[in-house]
Length: 162
Image (cartoon, rainbow, N blue to C red; front, side, top):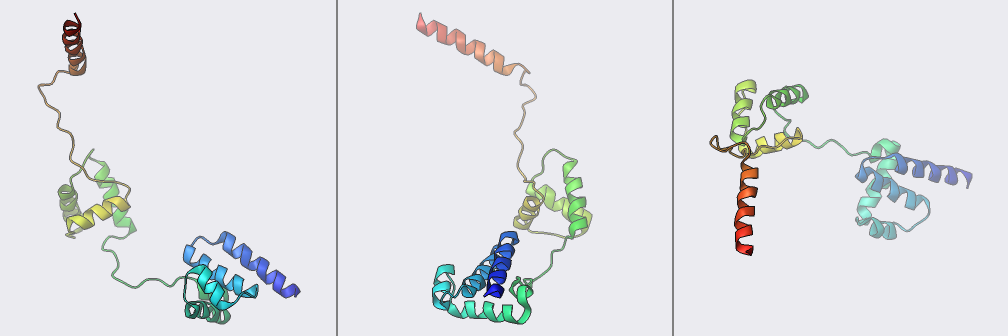
């Protein structure tokens, strides 16, 4: 009985410190099983099948905590590593604004990789940036244009009130 209490406290500590929500759910499932809940009830509580819960239990029995960790997802690795991403961010900061096409051309010139515009948007978002077209400032606009507009509005508004 004492062993069960220690193990339950251990699981509660693991759940509290775990960052990955998937691993947290797996730990909760094992904890509920340790507390003598029915496997079908626990599966229903967690929103998984009882077979999934059985797999978690089996993986925990085999490899303990490491068996519940998420496995890396296979797939194509990125063409730009962390060092390239840092260099790209510095290059992008040199100008105030970028269009997606401009960022695409910069990446192609600097790294020799051609990304589609959608991927360029993703890369920029990953860097905490975005691309946009700037507002065009008319060179003929006087610096105090807003004040002139306010004065003109007041004059016109004052005439209509009299």
